[in-house]
Image (cartoon, each protein chain N blue to C red):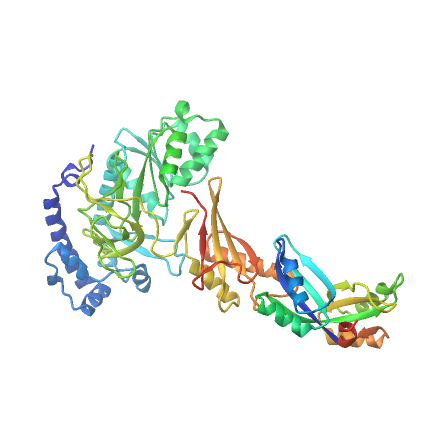
Length: 143
Length: 433
């Protein structure tokens, strides 16, 4: 139920993001989703890719500071209130969200959102108990 | 003009005789009164009686700052505490501070040397000396103060800081000689400009005696022009006595070392070999008259060379060139001694096994700035911005506590800090002295 996310430390200067994407392209790795959190000095690039282990190795070998974290992929109806419903569940159950970002396009009708939470196992349980569609890694990587 | 013509212009042969006599006494005294020296000499199989000529100085072991730390606080003192009348200490930036003590005679010697230095730098008993070196544990303030009193000048003990008041005093009290760090002198010049004070018209300032940090000929010219004075460089370090070890005369071509009280040597900092006259290397001092804290071959880590040629000012004492570097990696930032190793130890504590970092020192206006770039390794990395910002903050606070100055912390990607032969270049100093 957990999805592997690759996080990369990037300095806030030109060409750094391009360097990452170039490496991934050369490794024939496809990006499924991404988000960047940044400050004036640095940024953190978060990636969902089709081959997370390979991506981790490729970036690591190239000298990047990389870490693999786990996130939850949630499918929700692509209509007003879709995300609100999921957030309400998490809030009610006291699940703390560190950050979240939406998936870029998808093959299905649902909207996909990646959640990074404090306690991932509890969160998955809560969501499933409420009938929310939580995606598996295979489902996400192969999208 | 000399303060002590007999000693300052003593013929070299006579001076050397005096040095040898005093060296023998110093070695004898340290051997019998300081365990550290006795042990160090015994380890080399040397006894005080082996010192028969000035050349025999080479046989003696070096003394380092570490030795002072190992014997913290009073272990290197050669007299009982009842004889000590003053204690000064360093800021202790790389661990334990360095503690130095003075007997009544030592304070006497110090005042004599500072009086000589002030006269050498152009001051006389008619002068009003504004002493803007910090008063307190730092030897600068009190060292200059007692010398100025010995000279018979009028001393205004303003200490550092409160610049506008300093300038008001300078103007109203008719200060003729300013003593402070060169960067503070420049800063004062800037504030004067803001206050609409023209040194040429509004002040009586004639001379400046500046030291305690590195500066250059360019900086001298700038200070001299802006303050409309003649500026000389003074050198000293607390382990040896404080300010008043060496000073420039009106020729401004090297600093005369008061050789009747100190013997300078230049050594190769790598091998410890004594270098031939005139070659550049690390400056080493042996004290000849100090009672409380005699120093045998103390390694200053300052890089310079000695000038043997006679000086037209008439002083026979040898000169040293303006210090132009350090044999260790110490930096002086805003008057504070900083070692890159201190930054390393902070990073180690925060959880880095082999931290890669770089200190970037610059000067913005007249103020030194310090930026510390830290490569983000796996151990430090978190994929949450908040955590990384907390990390920056933590490093910043720890650095400030350890170094005593604030620094900007910048997290950078691995391998972005230049490495030469596999080793990271720790310091980039962009300041132009």
